[in-house]
Amino acid sequence: MSLTGAINIGQSALSASSLGLQVTGNNVANVSTQGYSRQVTKLVPLRGNSQAYNSGTGVGIASVQRQVDEAIQARLRSSTANSSFANAQSTIYSQVEDTLGELGKNDLSSQLSSFFNTWSGRAGQSTTNASVVQQGTQLSGFLQNLRTELTSQRSQIQSQLSGNVTRADQLLSTIADLNTQVAQAEVGGQPANTLRDQRDIAVGELAGLLDVTVVDRGGAGFDVLSGSTPLVLGSQSRGISLRSDLINGQQTVSVATKV
Image (tube, rainbow, N blue to C red; front, side):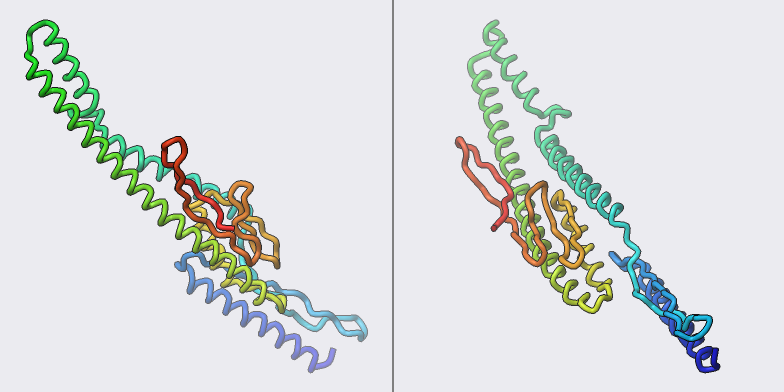
């Protein structure tokens, strides 16, 4: 090997090590950055020359790759969806429980018991008609207040649901746009790590609003499905909206795709 060849090999090693230090420094700098994925440099030996012994020409850098386990990511999204659903359900049940107040003295059961006890007393001539009317008026007022509070809670829940659906629709559009940006940025063969991190963050937030499944189609981007319904197909978002219908005299609310 000539002296020039030996110097070139050393230079390739220094260049690879320099980039490795930059990647390590970037990892340390972003250790507290939400959604950042640790990156590593992938090194490959450079092809040797055609001279005798074919000793090689040094080391090259194939790419800088993210360290992401897609299986763990899928499990995390599923767990996030289940946790969000359980928390929302628990919050709603707690609000209804507080309104009904069945664990206290001023509850519907107590009001009904007092009302029927008054009727029993009237049948036994121990109470007057005025007492029965008074107790009935009190029960009627209690039921009216209970209905008002439950209706108000329903309106609040629908308002929150509408806000969540709007945010989920925005995230679907963001994921579709990032699919396009990632495909354009990776035309040269190098992974767009920052854009991929941003897409993972958007999908993670979406999993907290919807139970979604992600299909990674490589260069074609992420397909996002809810059950068997596709919401994002490559660069196209079908979008979702909140639909309110009156069925058999009852108002029902559902989430449907726009397209």
